Image (cartoon, rainbow, N blue to C red; front, side, top):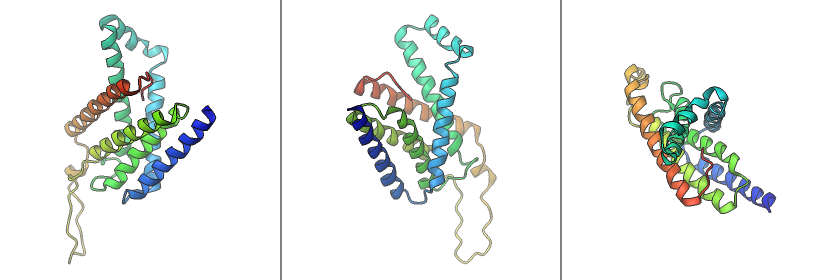
Amino acid sequence: MNLLQTGINILLLGGIIAAAAMTMRGSVGRDLLAGTVGAVLALGTLLLLRYPAFSWITAWSSRVLPRQQEAAVLLALYALVEEIAKYTVIAPWRQPVSGRPGRAAGRGLGFAGTEHLLFLLIPTGLFTRRLVLATTLHVGTALLYSRPGLLHRYRSRGCRHIPPPPRHRTGPAPLLDLLLIAIGTTVHFTYNLVLQSLDGLTVFW
């Protein structure tokens, strides 16, 4: 039965990604790949945090915080790691996607699709709900991270030379970057709490 469920889930995963990618104007295959890289980066970081060298994190949280708060702190940490990894491959000062929501959404979709390769063995209905919710989350935060509206636009009608956008519009903006990551992490943390109440699974990513 698990093999059949897995086959159905693979078809669902591929179908959702293909259908969504076709509707994202301006998105290209390498944007999905960039999202995949971000997801692998996040997973690698989360696995690294399980090494003994980082055991002080769980030791500190279990010693200082009640059990329920400890679980919340770990959920927040997972969300923060994911959002930093996602921001790294979406931030307009690295890969200019500002003003091109299709490309940013494609990267969020690649992120969501890759992370759900880990959940292919769970029941089909549960998998579908997780995938749809995660796609909504990651595409939404990806659009947020692309800083829509901050790209300086020039009208090219009648102009042969179009000056480049001012550096401060596309370069790093530490306070804005931190604010966006904080918003994304808060949304992701809330998503994890909602997901926990919906399906009862203790596996989060």
